Image (cartoon, rainbow, N blue to C red; front, side, top):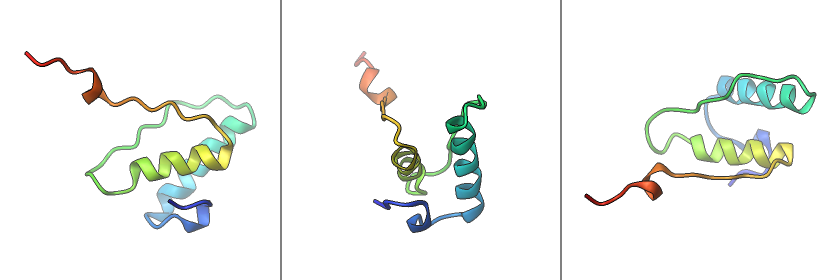
Length: 71
């Protein structure tokens, strides 16, 4: 798990956009929600957790699979 933005291995343009989004929230500028999507293994969760760590935000993680019922 990377500890800083510079350690994240992935699409640099996406990292810049996520960082700008998070920085705007930190300054008090409300932003539209951020949706990370793509195939498994592309770093979506890692990027989200890194963003939270860098911004010192608390993480509240939900997984839709946890709420499915067996019918």
